[in-house]
Image (cartoon, rainbow, N blue to C red):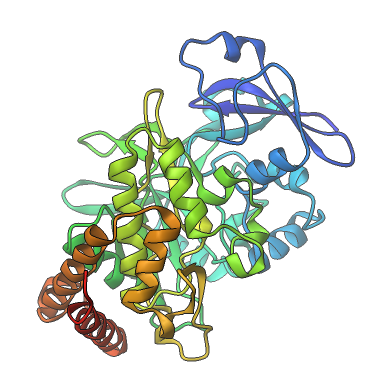
Length: 419
């Protein structure tokens, strides 16, 4: 099987191969000699010797979709769902961050194979209808798109520069996307509004959060998120990709183990990694603590290891903005078990000030600082939810009610707690 050429920011970094039993990755000599060389992952430091097995599987497998989306893509492409290499070969062109995997025969292909395919309104509607049966439009000519996660989604190019009108396109070849569209699954009505509202709430109270909005495409409510791993110019054009990896990749956990109860990462490990790996750990520890508090107060049980990431430049390693913020308690049938325990609390219903105090001990955080931060965020959340006009529309008020009650409860408990 021919190896795949691994590119970072359009430069050849190394080769990914499959020896029939496991993946093998090796950095190229030219990349190792480049003064601007970055490692692809915390688990794949710059070295001449090849990496074999688990470390390679975790990073490159972490670029691929999961669960039903992955199974459907495998069926559409006629490959095995557990064959990471074959899937990367077919869809690993436009991935999270600045990574692109290119079959040898495609490297150096003429620019005419790049660009975008502009879509009419009718074509966009038709694509939204197709996505559940053809995730990421895998197998369509000219498209090699991949995103991690179980939910159906599609990377696109959106241009809103001409008189406020919005044009939408599919990225071809090595063209980077600007946004991600997530059509709402039928089994979770209201998910798009829920996520857009939670993301807007986070931004409203001053948290660094990705931009997202709801837009109806045909009969399908969709969440449209601006990619935080892309830098755009003033007129909307893409300037460059930003490299990223999620916490599971950085800690060496496969996507199948993103939940702590299944052997995945804990908050203690996450905070320790930030302390050791971030170039500005004081700010990123605060950012991570804010995300834990926000998820607990807003009733989000699904804040797992793949929902936190690092962004990399040549000189910095910083936490990415918050993303995938959802009040999962809006669906009573969903588990309230926390993806990562807060102290000894294993479910949203249990979380109390004492559990946050336990977390501070485990993660070596200052309790007085955390105590004040919890109180401040609860007050900010209550201020924002008390002014519905400052947040996106919620036709179902369940989410606002859950968040308001949880913020009131946590604030009341905190005010009774001794520092």
